[in-house]
Structure formats: structure tokens, C-alpha cells
Image 1 (cartoon, rainbow, N blue to C red):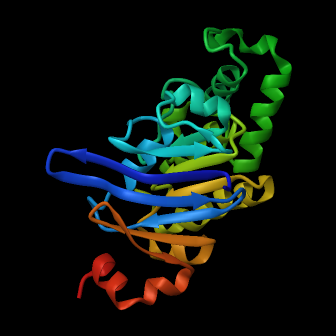
Image 2 (cartoon, helix red, strand yellow):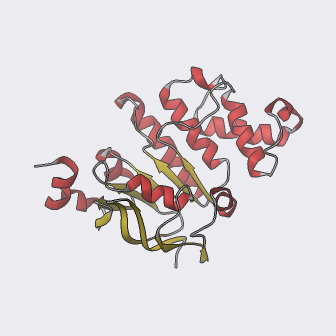
Length: 243
């Protein structure tokens, strides 16, 4: 069955068919980009997989276990993590403390205050190693440039040791100068650790260069899927960039 499978997934908001009978699968270590115009259902699909939303109908399986109605924290324990379009970080903590809090959560110590973190040298060492891998300096999170804030959000997700990570617009709001550094760092870590990823992305250069597979959504449905050659499909081009 693969790592993740969704079957006939539907989520409607009144007359809006945000996700409309989608079936797809993700293999272990695969990087799948989900693209489409605004309102096509990309983020809703990610929210359904992460547990932020419950589908109206259809089923979700992770490692052959049905997770359709499991809450987000249960999915995290099974190996599904996510980052957000707007980095979801603790602004007043340092980058090191942000990752340490995430590791403590992974280990079931979410009620431990960050000021007690120095007692746990193994956690600190693991967090420092992640910061070094992502090239993030140790400083207060709100003082980090946007590219490093994006990387910190992804590093926090990966500190949960997921088998699948959901990345929502990892290059959004990043300058062209920062973009290549950020996405190359993220993809490099995913590849080296053999972590599967579903990436919602608007930058087609990034999608074409890094995706194992591309899924094109429109009006809540999967229009096309395949390799980067589908980006040259006339129907896909009209949807993504217009006439």
C-alpha cells in the first residue's frame, strides 16, 4: 500500500468542494509536490492528512493503519509532521530552545519548561546538531531573517523524527537570493534521512527541480500527476499561469 494512501477523500465547505474525491498514495522517501491555483484544495488536502480537518467521507491510511479520524498529536506519534506557510515558532525563545521544546514534546515531556532544558544534555546536543545541519544560528527566533525562520519551522518538524513531513509553501515570502539556499537545505536533509514529503509549492522552478512526482490540483480534484514533463502540458499551463 505504500507509506500513505488516501481513498476517495472529500471535504466540502458549503458549496465549495475543497477536496473532491481524491485518491493518491505516497511511497517511503518520495518527494511529491502538490501544485495548483489558489483555492484548488492543496492546503485543505494537507490539513486532512495532518488531522487538522476531518474528511466528510473517504479514508486515510498510514503504514497500512487507518488514521482517518485520529487527532493530530496521534498522527505525529505515528510519524507525520508538518511545517506551515507562516512559520509556527516561539518568537521569544532562541532557535535552540525552539528545537529543544519540540524534542521534549516528541519524548512526552511537553509539560517541561524550556528553562529546565539544560538538565538534558542529550536533547541539547541533538538540537544543536539540527541547527548545524540547517545552518541556523542560535539567536532569539524573532530576530532571525525570514529564510532562517522557515528553516527553523522545518527543523522543528523534523526533530519529531517523522517518516512523512507535510511542507506548506516552504519558499513563500523568501527572496530569490534566499530561496535556493532554503530549499536545497530542506531537500538535502529529506534525501539524506529518507523522509517522504508532500510539498505544497507555487514556485515551479523549485517543483521541477526537486520533485519525484507532481500532483496538479484544480477545483478540489487531481487534474494530472506525473514527472516534471506535466508542467509543459497545455491544460496544466493554462491552470497554473493562464493563457
